[in-house]
Image (cartoon, rainbow, N blue to C red; front, side, top):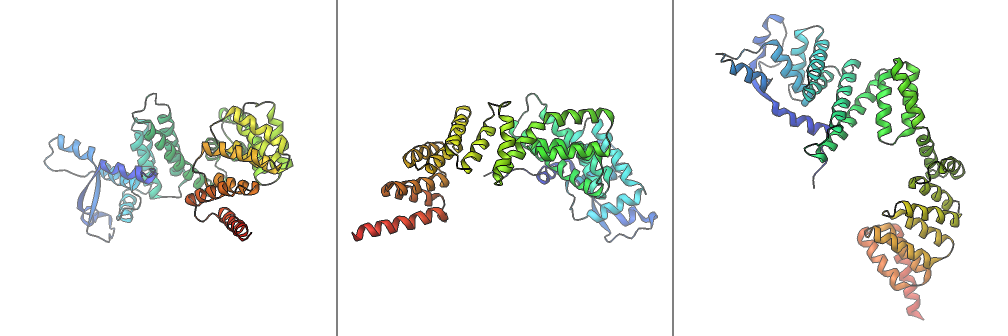
Length: 392
């Protein structure tokens, strides 16, 4: 089974761009009066820099400050917990009192020149040098989002699945960095602006609304402000839908139903909306209304088992157990390995007195989940019924 790639996995893949040279760093920095813990440290060097020097037929490879900074920063980007991390950071800080500014220039310049992955990694390295610098965090996050957007806009990606996977991990990493940024700077308007898009992508519409409103509150440039107002109008109904279905799931049925029904006329083809309206009615024990809505869901989206299950539960609520069995069996056709559906079939067959089918579904359910409490209770009831029948 292939495990999903993480940001750490992706970054570690990029170590192939590095090699290491063993250097006496005490000798290298003897003029700077810095006491290093180790005499020799493996210094990372980008292969392209080493290759460039060798192609010029230099008799001896001389590690310049630029090569040193690029190699170390890249390594700190791809492997922030490398064993010589502290030594590397001390080397960088010894080179300039304003080294972080230089690293941001390096990362952004590389990125703008079209080497976006490398530029992104340099910016990640800058966050390793100082994980609480707001400029480093923001620049790294924006680089991640830009690379993700570029991947999304590729017309014919070489490997679509891998491309989608990378988009996901870059966006998740960007969200993590931006959330860390607003912990440090609670009024960082652009961080709230970008987070709004990431929450919208994940269908967290209420959160997107809150964050875009915060971005407006803390101040955006005029063109971004206008864009945010447009976005807020676009997600207004999505926010209402999310709020409505969450209320239904939390048991606030009347309030949730009111919000969802307000959307029904505008979105008659939206099966998710129809589903949650039906769910609210079922939980209010208005079973006939619920069945009507779940039938609409099936007309719009017949592949999923959920509306069949809900119709079955509604018929069971009306005491129409044979109709309930019919719809649970239809649901089982959609999802043959569902322990929940099998368990429900066992219960309803017990209600009708069909002990043979009840036993069949109990056995099937326990194969899926031997510890399912509802199925075990059904088995206990079945065993008792069989025992009583045997005594007669």
